[in-house]
Length: 410
Image (cartoon, rainbow, N blue to C red; front, side, top):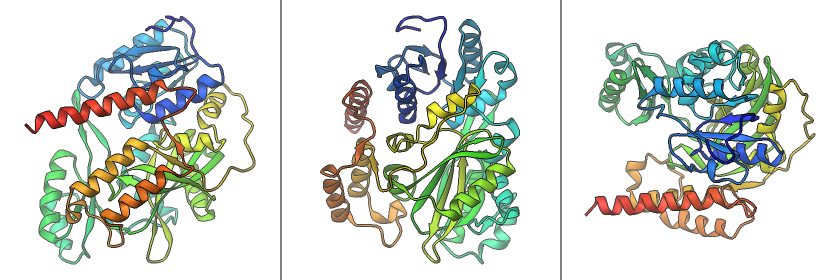
């Protein structure tokens, strides 16, 4: 660990190459807290921030999850931290497995193990939502291909095939869960069989056309302390994925009610993002998933004065945060390089292969929107004039990736 090699720090944050981690480091560092960033490599995005107090390089949680857990435990035992914040699904899953060993040493930003596990299982989450009267897409839970074949002929296509979890432990490695689309019975059966072999019993849902919306929450034993809402304006990939352009939104009473019902039922403590899609047919919000960790568009909330990382730290230390009564509506945040990727995806791929909705803009429309956004007043998520290190590092990594792909095509 460098940048001072301190013995007493405030917060250890994993996954330094995540943009949300950059947002956490900037938030806490600006409050004068000492934040150490962990990652598989030296000089990660967040470690390049001037608000980072040190780095911790650990084994890859993907290829060596046990090594990651051992290194994390040893590091925490050697140093004095107040709070550990795992930032990705994988880091949260691995941290939850050793949480009983960690909690005597420091606070861990995770809810109860059962709550996190249930929320991470899309099938169990949908069933819980149904029991609470929360709208969800029409969903099937086939256990095998034979069960699916009996109902597949009666489905209205296209449908969405989702792995139950984003990651699943298999020995000392992890299987990755995916979201796929099927436009016919035969395509669905084939994709289900492949997905089932990788991660058992994926779910099948109707495809919901409409804009994505999310509600961010900080809870204490199931009670919401702070809520924030946003709308996704552009995503990568365009059919649904990481938001590259988003804006703050008024809290929707329905989303708030549904989210609070879920989080209360889970007795949730910590942060969570509850994701919905507004069904274009009747404007009903349909639950998509819960992320029991910080979200990719965290910087937007912080830009609006909703400082979730600092509030999470305060709650972990049994300090009562002071929350603003309101936040600005319509403030936009843009991940510029992600938006560049969105533009390239639209221009370099056939529309049919991207599984786009019927009303999605064409190439010219997307280009015009991209240019307009360049001259808009939206906040740049990564480029902060008082902390240029992460944006410089991201640009270098991006260009290196592009050059590598071009060389590979030769």
